Length: 427
Ligand code: ADP
Image (cartoon, rainbow, N blue to C red; front, side, top):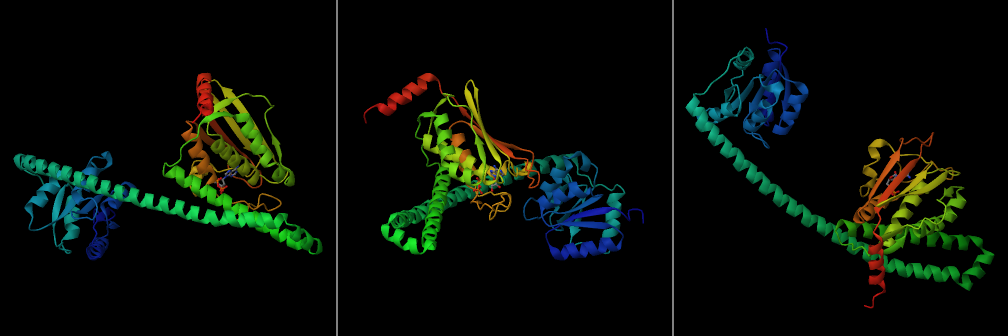
């Protein structure tokens, strides 16, 4: 038969009808592709370029008419027959289908014996038409129906959004409450371990059994790590819920970098990583929250160290760009793939193995929760700045490295003075 190899897309949510029509058309030599929902049908139509579309009208998401109108608007479907399947009793359904752009219609229940020939007829050019005055009247009704459906969908979405916002707030409150509740006893435990660590009793015991001292050291490190994780969770969830107020004041960027570098000096020495800083004396003052900015620089520096093998290098550069200052932290580590370079700034996003960073010859354990960069981004953007990364990709053999850039607005001298005065003013 002439249309034997034609592809028919059948958009129908009832599996029984799907099977029946598929079998009948396949038996007649057609290739049949199926979609159960309107959106899926649209996607499949653009993918498969069918020769004819059989369209059920009552679909669970978009109606068959809406799918038809959508497809008709695309040049590639202007001449493709779209045949609506409508209930026999509703003449207005059929008229609306034609107004929406259908070539014709078949009434349900489908007569399986006649179907292949009916499909062939539409493929040969059969077309149903409406009288002009009927088309005009039905078209007005169809447009009203579309606007009504659009309005009710928007209302539904607004309600969903409202509900999502409410749930999101409950989640943020829960995270903050839990983190607070964990932090309080942890502070006490940390205090006890410090007492134990510094006690003469421990020194005496450790003299006879050195492993005791290393057990206490391990305990202290784990508690400090746990404290850091809880603080990260608290900071990120406060930013997410907009509950962070920046405490702005005059800040020397050079001092912050120096402090961060000093903090990581023991880790760098242990792993033979050299950190190269710009020559001292850059005198760049910012109007910023010093603690949060320090936290961000520390996060970037600790990542640079974490993802660089032993013996590597971290280079910090600063560039004064009139109204902006740009800080960059480059490493000689594993690098980051192009498709990950945006996503790593999302909350809880980690690229690769979070348990063990094998890039380090000392198998440096460091994978965190994927919150550090989310915090950096939130802090920098709240200061009106930008943060991004440049890397040639992740390669554990070649170690292409990554460079993180951040830019921050430089305040006018008057702003710094005002901020200094505000700080020194009596409460
Ligand atoms: P984490 O605590 O897991 O390091 P971050 O938010 O700081 O979380 O980083 C997210 C992910 O970005 C990391 O899991 C890591 O895969 C990648 N990443 C961050 N910094 C670097 C870097 N300097 N080199 C390579 N990968 C990095």
